[in-house]
Amino acid sequence: MSNRVFHAVAGTISVLWLLPIVAVLVTAVRSFDDIAANGLAAFPQSFTLAGFGDAWTNGGASAMWNSVLVTVPTVFLSLALSSAAAYALSRFEIPGRRTIILLMLAGNLLPPQILLVPVSKLAELLGIYDTLIALIVVQVGFGLGFYTFVLQGFMRAMPNEVQEAATIDGAGPVQIFWRIVLPMTRPALAALAALAFTWIFNDLLWAITVLRSSSVMPVTPALLALQGQYVSNWNVIAAGSVIAAVPTVAVFLRFQRHFISGLAVGAVK
Amino acid sequence: MRRVPPILLLFVLVPLLVEGFWVFWPALQGFWLALTNWDGVSAPRFVGLGNFSRMIDDPVFHTAVTNTAIWLVLFGGLSAAGGLGLAVLLQKERRGVGAYRAALFVPVVFSLVATSLIWQVLYQPGGIFDSSPLADPDTALYAVLVPALWRQVGYVMVLYLAGLKGIDPGLYEAATLDGATAWQKFTHVTWPQLRSVNSVVLSVIVIDSLRSFDVVWSMTRGGPYHSSELLSTYMYATAFQSLKLGYASALAVVIFVLAFGVIVTYLVRAFREN
Image (tube, rainbow over all chains, first blue to last red; front, side, top):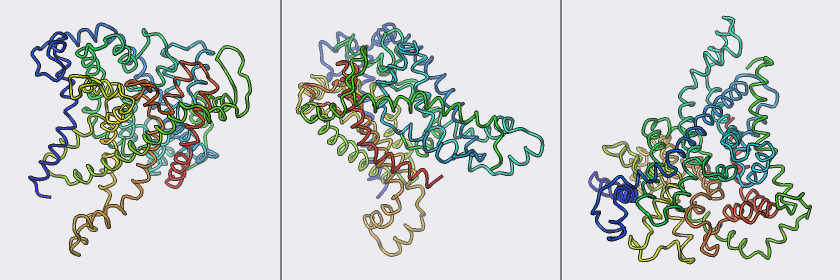
């Protein structure tokens, strides 16, 4: 394919792909009156950040904070627990290690629907229903199998010599994990952290399963509430979706390489 | 590989217990609840396979199954075909190709809720359409499918790009020497070499199709008149809106059974690679 044809084809597709995003960005900075008077398709006659202000002050800010409170501990706990499991399962002869790895992975492949009713009842029973703790623990539990699977594959590929040398120097298994294996796992951890961040930040299903009150809702479910609250205030709804997309787009742009390699390696979700 | 120091058993046991408590134990309960009638308040009443025989006469269940099948074929088929096509188009490193890949990939990082709000804005009367395709039972399912595809295609493209990168360039050179056309190169070199990626993509799209919930829930809640209902949305509404927890669990079991073959295939492959 000649260069000119290639750029014409790829360029057209890319522009078409970005068009919805552009349309929403434009809608987000129009005023309500402009949209009401001229319609959504009309050329914008106004420029205002009022939509962002409305979306942010009417729940956006607190939802974003809730998302931070859920996402950061969930990513941290998931990776801490799964790298510990992956280390033991990949570098030592744990009895039944293959079975354990596959069992854990199988848990992550289950359709979440089979878990929804029991998980919400379990959270009620423990008295953590409608709290962010419930959302954190269930997402940690559900994600562990996948992260462990990816990490143990990565750790198994490490040369044995490093571990042996450290053992001769008198380092215990925990020290080896902390000082040698974890630092060497950094690229995989970075990829998984970027992926986990977007999955957890974007989650809707677990949130609406274990949470009820709007005061504890993270960004993604809060967007749905915003939609109900601002029916046909398209500038506010557009601004809300832009705000909700900013953190994940930022993570993607910052960790682009890790992010893509993580997707390609894992490929379960 | 060496003898196991006791502390490492904790390294495995703690994560295993967390997953066991929040995944395996609830999953077992889910299968049990599928055999009961339960309102969530009084004790569950055992009804055997009653919930499953009830599905036979449930018109909404029939719609949900049909729509899930349509979803599987269209969402799965089109995202696989589109993702492969774009990956082939953008596989060669050349000027500007990074920007095109990024453009196609951006929607992947949006949540499905944000995605569906973006498209709801586009669908509004007075925009592209005179009346919203989400409001018409004949078009609602397809109107929801478009945003889902918009987001999935870039993801599948990344998987195929990784697969294409692994193909030995010598194979293409040999094919060129033999005078192969572009199409012949694709059918005789690219496609056979993509076998393992194809099976990954197949698992991903089947699992993703059956999991699809967010986009339908945020755009239509399965309506109007259940016309865009999927098994996943019907299950959620049955559980948390109608509070028929037993019947909802039975619907979840149906989803599980549909996903089972793919899950097993995936695990077998993971086992071999291990």
